[in-house]
Length: 122
Image 1 (spheres, helix red, strand yellow):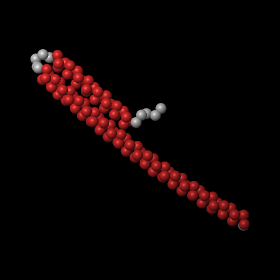
Image 2 (cartoon, rainbow, N blue to C red):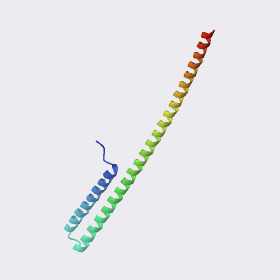
Image 3 (cartoon, rainbow, N blue to C red):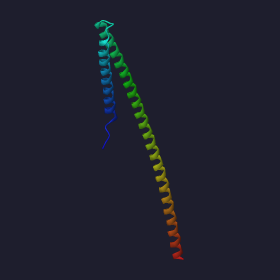
Image 4 (spheres, rainbow, N blue to C red):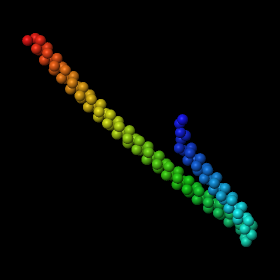
């Protein structure tokens, strides 16, 4: 089976983190609503502030992770390209050497044939 593209996984991870941040924010809102020291408007404002902070932190973390994943993918692609280039250079060198060797052997065979033909004439 083919693996799904990494881009879809990163988006999925980002959406999961955002959903988790929203859930935490709503939970914080619910917990803050139970505190009777502050007025309802102040409690709601604090809960919204907390949720916004948590959501912002989660988004920052997701952006950092996405950037790191993209850097890793770029490094992997560059390494693969370098390795492919090296392998192609080696193959070209080996092919050239094999062709030189074959040419030398053909020249030697031609020389041997000339020698045999001359010996046959004498």
